[in-house]
Length: 97
Image 1 (cartoon, helix red, strand yellow):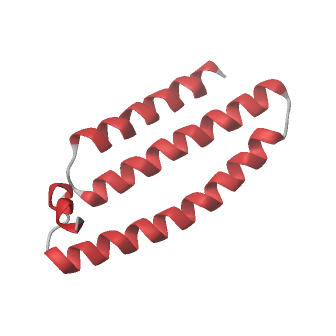
Image 2 (spheres, rainbow, N blue to C red):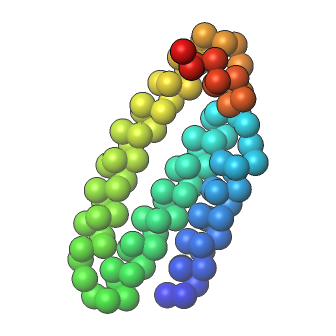
């Protein structure tokens, strides 16, 4: 079980580095998804360790929420790229009033 938790930690760290170090909006969106999947993996591992079904149910719920988050996030990225022509996160300050 500790191997799965180590994998979850590694995935979360890779996702966090991707969000912090990259400026491409698509890469940032993928990195957020990797972080969410790492959290779901940790939920399932703890659920299995303690013999409870609660973590697995929360994992399935989190996967459903992640699907909606991807749809909305991708729609925002596509709209921004159509408006500005590039998926650069530093240009998002143009969305301010």
